[in-house]
Image (cartoon, rainbow, N blue to C red; front, side):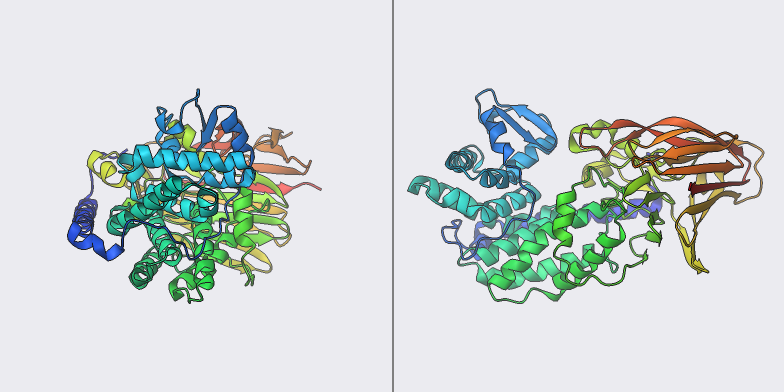
Length: 565
């Protein structure tokens, strides 16, 4: 835990504060009566195109409403005959989802006239209660999601509506568009800001009379894409799951450009191609993304939908150096390895301290997995999920390799508590006679304990044997004080484990009956309880193998995971 900022962090904090102030000032200028005329009248009464929706739908959502329930963001609110807009929200994630209206897709999927009338009624209720879009309802990212949702489901909201309903919705849609055009700069760094520009570009393509804003909006969007999507296709936050969310927004946007017979900006096209490659790199054998830096509950349908649009499935990339990930694949075994430092402070509020951790699958079965991130309804578990001990790597003295910065003004500025360190991470991947070998090191424990963590993993040509070596090296030679260390191997849920017949061994059995032997030399191996956070039902108990010992700064632990039979 760190309560003070380094000199460099103080300078960065000052820069962020100045940038936020500048953006707020610019938004106020653009929102002034002298400037708002640039965005047209606040009425979207004629649509040129209706953007497609690619997100998964759940027709049973309407049935739940009929049963007086409104489930959003993993939390169910009981209506008791009231409008959801009149309820005390169970949490902020639920409230943001409510005001974002992404749930309209479920009502449209229900395909009934009753569902249509419910959608129109709730939209009109929103215009009555939240027309000024104050507080959370008026946050730029929430406004952007609502704008996208209302445009994508304009047929549901407007077809068959009476004149009063039609005009109320068209006026609210136009007001949101004008407001967001002026205030998008106040969106937080990262995906929220990119979302606002996607929504504005989508609206400029869809709403009649907004062509004159399109060139400027597209230019801002291209610049933001270039800032956020790295050269290897990863997102600057290092959260692979964000790529799916961004692609589910960019794919309809690309289609809207095509529908208007306009060329999308080259930055969008290039970024999408890189993102496809990055998503393929980060998939394990079960088809899902590895759980690093905020990846939470798996949503197979969303990832499958995105990858179905990949028309250029070339050779599989092995290394994503800019994003800090590597992929080792032999036979039916896939390993995803994290060798990246945390993202910039303003984007590190959801980053995990998992440097030099890995996940591993055999065929379609998961073997070693990180704990992942909890869903929005289980935020109390977030700190535990971000800790190094929840990842498949080494910890020293029960501390994380990254420090959590508990600095109130900084947390208030970026909306979360970021992590710092390791400052330096190095990696080398080599191939030797069909075997793959990765060696990486980080300095996350240098300032506190004078220790460097070095990890080497080697996967043989068949993919049936993984050899690992974890070393702790003293930066200033051996220490007089012994420090405890632990190497964690978290097992996937539903994987069983028992002690082996000899000390230092364990037998692991996957769900399909496949068995692996894990052997450790140089530390004491035990089977311990663990927690898997990224489950749709909430955090659940699981198991881990843990190799424990002590070090004075010159320690080596060798371990082997080998398939039996």
